[in-house]
Length: 308
Image (tube, rainbow, N blue to C red; front, side, top):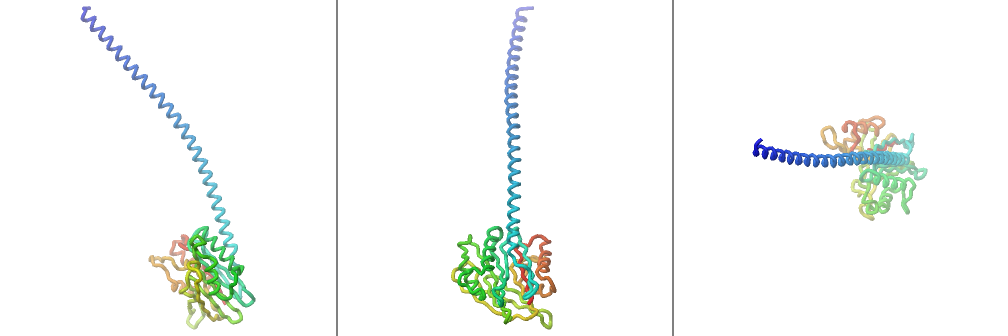
């Protein structure tokens, strides 16, 4: 081997050693990176399992909270129904239907004897839905049931509305107001006195030679209750006859779009009621449900039917 060959061999050997050292260095770096990645992966897995456990605990807590709230809403709804009056067989006969649009609504109603001769009838509609509306609705009904307004003549509907207006100002009721129809039937004279504050008129159906005659019983200029203090309210009277039917309603009984998307009117409701022979509240509700494809109605449905 010549000197040149020996020099080339040494040079190649040195290059191979340098290349080997370089490759070993890169391998060491890769092993270090792999170790780091392995630690990161293991930490991620461990953390992910902890997150999954925490999410599972939150889901269990959320489910229990939802179940508790639903139970409380059911209890509240049952209480609202518990204060509604018993249906009456006579003097006058009374039937009714209340179907809230949500778990709790703002509609409520009642009737009771003020004395042996006077019979009070009332239906209220608090703005909005939910717990706040239901609480205010129950408070008002309890006041009326107990005749618990100071210096109020509960046989005089305009006086009742004026006193309610001052007793429940909306600025003290979370800015909520309500509407009301209030009537008093005097058995000895057959006279029905009534007043309404921002509320739909009641429907009077009277037998006539050509079917049933429709009369509107309401005071359309009446302000909603709670909006302005010291508001006067006007009333009206109507002489009841044997066989008359009185429907006291909320606006949820007709402010619903029909199959053409047109909102029904009070007159259409009255015409439908006139064509219904028995069980008017349930029949009207079933009729309205057809426009909603049997889904919940957009507003609370409240109707009382009295037969004199």
